[in-house]
Image 1: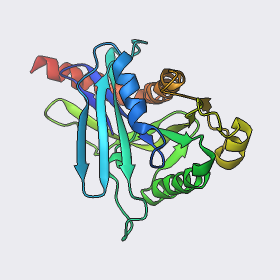
Image 2: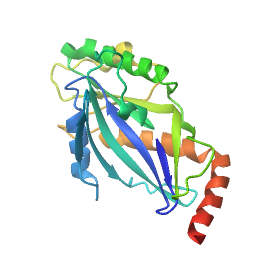
Image 3: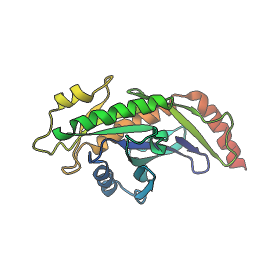
Image 4: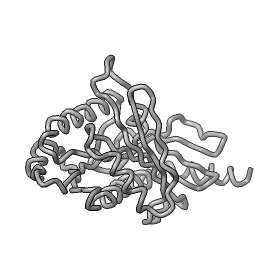
Length: 234
């Protein structure tokens, strides 16, 4: 969910790190938190079948959207996809952008595909779709909230595909992983939180897909500017 806050002049986006068990979601988020300037504290929570780690930061690119700064909420999504009846993921439901982290270990190739298939099916079931283009979203309701905030629900969610653990000596080739996992021309990258590459470039690419998508919807900003002015007057 994209949150527009007129009081702080910020727009917040949720970036979800998703993938099979042991693919490196935890080390990915820990690596980012260690090297990003002035991040928030890492929070951990667990609700029934779902666990998450998260933190927030303001990207170094300093992109502004119609005078609003933006913040990225980065969170992992660890869940049992075999839950019955079909599970509901509060983390995936809130996603504005998704990094699918695939494990380069050949022993985990089947799990990569299983979790990617699940992700596509889950998004379809929730009335949304993964896109290799820009984010597209719409207001949750037709009125602006009186507390100076507005929520937009993404129905086209940009995603990227990260081939993680490229430091492994027995890693699968990128050509093999492309053959197994690459879909619809999705942006792919190699990453390793051990050797420290691929994480920030991936987030930068996704960051632009989200901010550009919100910026292109000019009809929103007429209402945003009007509501922002009212908020200041109050």
